[in-house]
Image (cartoon, rainbow, N blue to C red; front, top):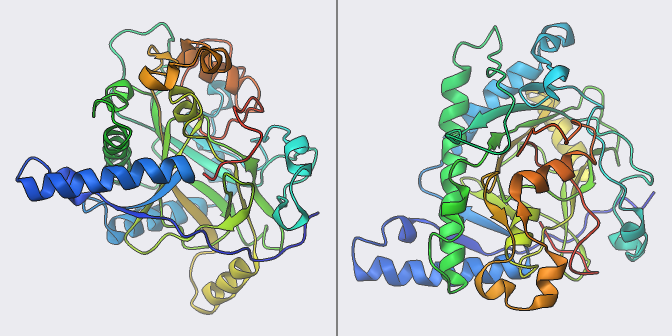
Length: 383
C-alpha cells in the first residue's frame, strides 16, 4: 500500500455562473460571462474539473439533502434492504456495500511515483460504499436503447423523498448544463453544442454513503481508483474530506469544495466528444488523517457518522452519436482513437466491465463509476 499522507490541495479556478445566467440582460454581464467561459474551458483542459459558484444552489440546499440521506442510511440494514433491486442491476434504489467493483488499473497505478500512488489495492476489491440511484430529467420519447421501466424507489419512512431529491437533483443538473454551455463557448464552438446533446440523457442523482461506524481505519479506500463514465458529474460539498484526484501530469492532490460551491468534473463522455482535449480524470475517496479528525469531531458533536457525497451524473442522450465533434475531430488519428458509436452503446460497454449489470441487454446510460484503460493519453488527468 502507498504511504498515507496528505497531498497538497489542488488550487482550482472558481467559475462564477451568475454572469452566464444573466448574460442576456446587458453587455456587462455578457462580457463577464465571456471571461468565465474562457476560465471554464482552460480549467477543464488543464484539470478536468472546476469549482463552481452557482447562485441557484446554496449551502442550505445541500444541507437539507445531506440531512435526509444521512437519516436514510442510518436505518437498519434490514429496512434498507427493501429498497435494493438487484433484478434491475441496482439502477433504482439502493446499491449495498461491497457491490461495485472498480476496474483494474494496476498498470497505470504502478507507473506513479511513490508519493503519487493511489491507496486502492491491486487487483481492486469491491468498494465498501453504498449508493442510492434516483433518475432525473425527462425520458426520451423514443430510443434504440430501451431503459428498464422500474418505478422509482421511495423509501417508506421518507414521504418527502421525491421533493427533496428532485429539488436538489435539478439544481445540480442545471449547473451541469450551464457549465456545458459555458465550456462550449470557451472552446469557441456554438453554446448549445454540448447542452443540446444532454437533452433526454439518463441523468442520475446518485448519493454515495460510507459508514464510519464500520469503515473508519486510516487508509481505508471508500471508492477505488477510477474515472466516471458519464459526461459531467456535479458534486455538492461533503461533510467529510477524503477526495484525491490526479493532475494531468500525474500528481496526486486533495480537492476541497468551499462552502456554497459545487465541484464539477469531466467524465469519459466529455473526453470522447472532445477527442481527448478534455480528459476524464482518475480519482479515489479514502479515509485520510483529515477524515479521522473530522470523524472524532463528529462524535463529540453527536453528528452522523455517515459520509454522504452529493453527486449527480449527467449524460449525453443514449441515442446521440458519441464522437469527437467539430474541430475536436479534425485529425483522422483522433477519430481512430474515438470511433463513433451511440452513447447508449458506449455506456453498455462500460457497464459490462463493472459489477452493476450485464451491460448488454439494452440498459443504457446508468451509473458513473465505470472505468476504461483506453485513454488517449499515457498521463493522468484530474477529475
